[in-house]
Image 1 (cartoon, helix red, strand yellow):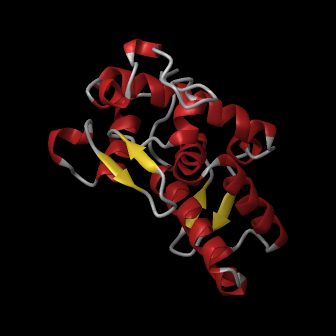
Image 2 (cartoon, helix red, strand yellow; image 1 turned 90 degrees about the vertical axis):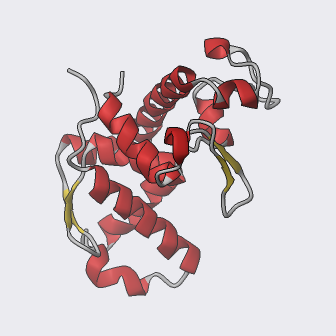
Length: 181
């Protein structure tokens, strides 16, 4: 189980201090996707957590049969985040990215040096997806592990923005405990 402080830190970032801790919060992301609950879980995250099936129907996991059930059930949201995190860890490991956390790799970020941690990697995958996290590390490996000096070399504004999102999550979560021993 992911420690409550990690979940609460993520929830605080995602809901930006919404009333009632954001459990019933919904918002529309820049890509048009609806994000649900305190942890702002989107379609892929809900599917990865096993909350919805391939036809986008709620399957009843944790007693959740609808969007409203999900929004009104903090414990189901916490459990879904935990399930998503396990799926994200597997995906990141399959992409070969987790070894950067295993080795405590340091990258030279735009704002500061960052030690790569599992906590940061999973938080980044939650924000933008494991595939983009992999692309970020592939790019860093080709550019001396230094985003600070090379950020302006990224010509695609969407890629630049996404890489900044990855880096921000890596930085913000590098010292947040992630898994209970």
